[in-house]
Length: 174
Image (cartoon, rainbow, N blue to C red):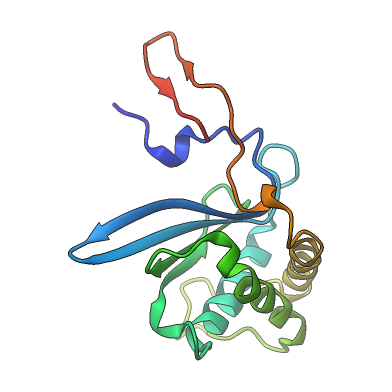
């Protein structure tokens, strides 16, 4: 079976940042999936599951209420590896154009007193939230984004050599 593109990125070289994961065309419309990487895969601990769930709720709510962006938001959700999130938007913007939006989204967590949608009738696992830890991760990532705004490395997947595995599969440039 052919390896999908997101599994073909060399995860030992990714740094936290905002990356274009893929661009799809649906009819005449472009849909872009962004990799919003919060921690270094395989180098830093994964994000606490309850904190990740809390960040998902808070930031999804923020994004879907942001006046200039809400109509373009398709999806915000956690990566299975718990090192970041996927953001799917209508259109095809560069990751740099998302910097301010995501910086504000992660900064908004600091002012959150209650987790939106964290009641039994609204959430499939409403008891699994950790607001204090979510605030810690959000502040750390927001500070990182702010201090690296002009750093090209946080917007482009690192380049690596193309490798071919023993069974002939190509390990694509990331």
